[in-house]
Length: 235
Ligand SMILES: NC(=O)c1ccc[n+]([C@@H]2O[C@H](COP(=O)([O-])OP(=O)(O)OC[C@H]3O[C@@H](n4cnc5c(N)ncnc54)[C@H](OP(=O)(O)O)[C@@H]3O)[C@@H](O)[C@H]2O)c1
Image 1 (tube, protein in one colour):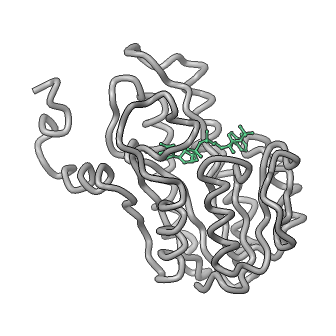
Image 2 (cartoon, helix red, strand yellow):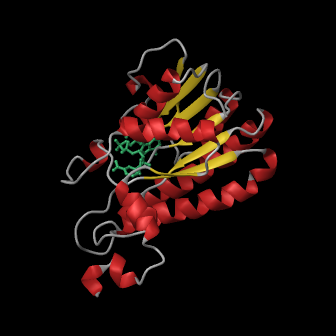
């Protein structure tokens, strides 16, 4: 699908990768971008084509209200996400629930509300922001990995379910992206702009999956190997 002239909605658009998605869509010539955020007043980009709207992905009433307002959406980017897990222990139950509520039930709620909108506008495109951690867990990322694995499974099911209404469903996997979420991590990081530009290109090319960096490409290609290769500490 062409970005030029399209209408898009990005969740978590106020900062981090969501802001980069919003910028890339505007730079690509989108006619309108709904910048959805828990606090729409925190959206800093100014552009006459930008429409800040309130949307908390964990609040079904807020999602439904956004879907009633943004009835012209053709490209939906489920970007909003959180990470709460930290430390070498099993995930704290409350933190794991917040991650599952936001990273799995969030995109599911938004997809429920907007799938009919996409259908009414010709099928369109649904992008789910996943992670390399959909496929691999490190000791301190158990709850987040579980939520992103669930979101990956949801992405695959949604791709099949929405195929007949003509919706292109893209899963985006990346390792570390240089945003506040991983500011505390010392590692090679890809820029949010790069992930956003790859996503815009994939939308236009009709692709189904983006492996945005070497880490996600390496882990995906290693999935068929003996598990001890992915988890050397248990070898
Ligand atoms: N950074 C990485 O290394 C990395 C790697 C792979 C995948 N990802 C994924 O990429 C996406 C964007 O992450 P990021 O790196 O940009 O993180 P970030 O800088 O922490 O930004 C997270 C965004 O999600 C929003 N958000 C959180 N909970 C929300 C809710 N309940 N409803 C609506 N918005 C909510 C935040 O809004 P507020 O300002 O209101 O908090 C913020 O806009 C996430 O899905 C994340 O899991 C990130």
